[in-house]
Amino acid sequence: GCGGVYPLAAVLSAEQGKEEQTQHREQQTNDSGSNQHDHLEDDVTSEAKNDDPVHRVVLTFSTQGVGFVTVPIVAVILLHWTTNLQFVWRAILGLGALPGLVLIILQWRFSRGKQRPHLVPTEEPLSENHHAQDEQLQQSSSQQESDSVPEQEPVVVESEPQDDEVSLHGGNGSWFQEPGLGRKILGSSGTWFLFDVVFYGNTIFQPIVVEAAFGGKSGYDGIELLRKTATDSLILTSIALPGYAVAGAIMGKKTCCVTQTPRYVMLQGFAAMSVLYAAIGINWSYLRGYPALLVVLYGMTFFFANYGPNTSTFILPSLIFDDHHRATWNGVSAAAGKVGALTGATLFEPAADAMGDSAVMIICAVVAVVAYLLTLFAVPKVETEHARIQQSDTVDNPVNSSTG
Image 1 (cartoon, rainbow, N blue to C red):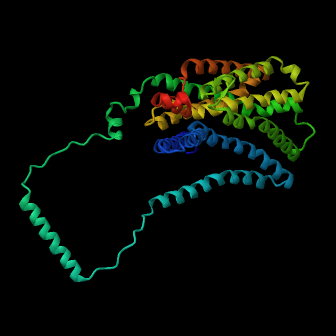
Image 2 (image 1 turned 120 degrees about the vertical axis):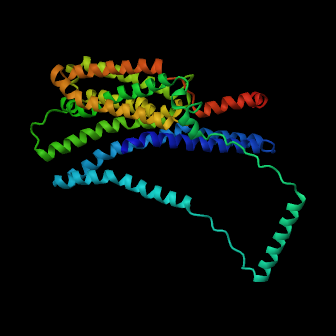
Image 3 (image 1 turned 120 degrees about the horizontal axis):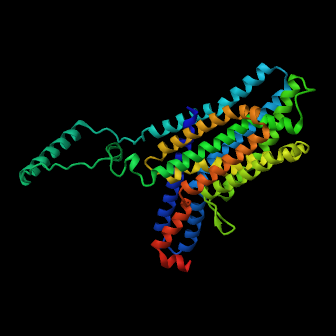
């Protein structure tokens, strides 16, 4: 279902970016002997950087943020336009199905275009005399070849097993013979599980924080309360939305003498989330007297969630696993995240009733610290594809890289 979008979208984006990078490198190799080598090399390098699979995957995932902010925008518009709640919730639900329908149509047209055979212009039909002459010539030539060439025993050539056969019967392509597989699964699945516990748990917990900041339900009728809730949700979502853009802007680049790899970005996100949740939980009673500050701090937890682990958990499985099986292990990691989402959405409200709202924030801080440590020790260090290309070019062409 919809959960399959995670592994398929990430892997397809990474493979498309890698394919375009390969084409750029081949173009660079073919043009290396021309007079405009230096200019072409700079152009191709810049294009390869822009087509880094990491950036392509980040761009794919960032559309999730557009979907998140669209929901409260549509809700605010509809709730101020009509008081017919039956129409409002049906309209929001129906609009949510439109992207899927558009995708089905585009995919169908794309598949139909690829399957359409290329038409070859046919020549004018030959006369029967021409066909008879061609048949006589073919028969005579085949007779001469059979008389001149001695008969040979047929040679049987054993075909090598394809990748699918190797994958099924073991060998280098086996699912479970990938080096460091256990650590990779623990890192990708474990961090995704812990992050979704906090992220989706706070999605359910969000109205409680909003109520603490802006007041309770008293004094509002049904439609006014819904309008207020949608507006408050839009404020929090607007604070969180730039996290996707910041991740896309710096991912893979060198800032402050450090390359912002997906793993390093994830560490930053979990660290910031742990500090913010701890600050909110410890100062909960104080922050209730300053609603604006409470909303900003709480909104920043979503900002760093989107900037860090929300984006990185989507990217990392497509980078750390073997190319032949990364879609499968990406799906396993995404499934672990859905289990975490169910856990957080189920347990947060009972925990708040039993221990208090501040305790829930402290628990979020502890989970973020555990996720940080798991990222630090279990997620392997990976470079962006552009950095690996630059490193391989330096090894293959040490003279050009040193003089350039």
